[in-house]
Each structure stands twice: as C-alpha cells, then as structure tokens.
Image (cartoon, rainbow, N blue to C red; front, top):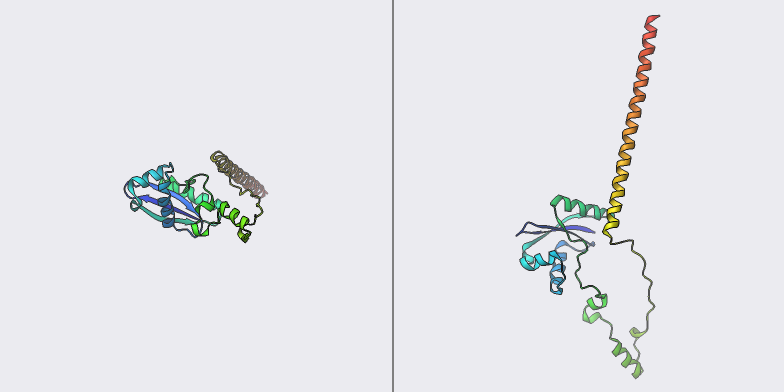
Length: 193
C-alpha cells in the first residue's frame, strides 16, 4: 500500500491519499480524472474540474506494509503538508457493481441471452447458476468516531506508560539517595572509632 500526495500547483493545496500496492500516484490521479465525468460531489473533484489534471503533480510519500502503518503515514503526511485528505473519496457512483465496471468483452451474457439459449436447448456453461459466497467482515468500520476513540485510547495508554516510567525513575532515585545516605552514615561512624 502506498501513501501519495497530489499538489495543486495553482493553489499550493496538498491532497493526501492512499492506494493499493501496484498503483502509482499518477495512475490514481488518472482514476480521479476518469471519475470526474460521474459528477461525484467532493471538493477535490471541484478543484480538478476548475484547474484540470495538468495543474496537479503526483508524488509518492511512503510505502506501508499494513493498514495500521498506512494510517500512521497518512496522518504524518497530512500533518507535514497541512494537507487535505482523499481518504474515502469515490471513483465510481455508489451502487455500481464490478460487473458494470468490467470491459464489455468480459461481461457475461445478459439474462435475456441465457433464456434464449435455454429455449433453443443450447445452454452454455457460463449460464449455470453459481453458488453465492458469504461475505466476510474486513475489519474496517468506516467510522470516524471509532477511529477517534481508538486514537484517544492510544494517547491515554502512552500517557499511562509515561507516568509509570516517571514513577519508576523517582523510586530508583529515592532508593539511590537512601543507599548513599546509609553509606555516608556508615562512613562517619567508622571514622569516629
């Protein structure tokens, strides 16, 4: 997975987004350009429509190994550039299926063609009903409130660890003072003998 930036050379706005591995920032910009015709309402699309694709320079920010690292890198890029997030921006109209997005040559015949083949007795192998696979949860919630709660929990854990570390340092310092005081007391009694 990658984190990339799209810089509007006209306004100096920095848009920060992510993409799956194997997709370059330039390809992702082209996907946004292709989706512009769909009329999706998003501030980035408005900028893209006004200034055009040529006004944006795409560059790679970082490569992430997993989703957690990608989220951290995305936040780092947003902070570093005071950027605007492209997270969750759509490149297809809601409700569009993968079949509708596939090139026409790869699409399966419509149900009308399959029914005509059944009537003529020449049923093709592709017209057999396929079993429906059960969808499994991906672990993504898509909830900004839950993400904030997770971040708050992480910050609280960091604060708790820092407080425990400070307490340990104070206890060790107190213990060292007690040892040194004991040595000083012992040394002063030996010199009196």
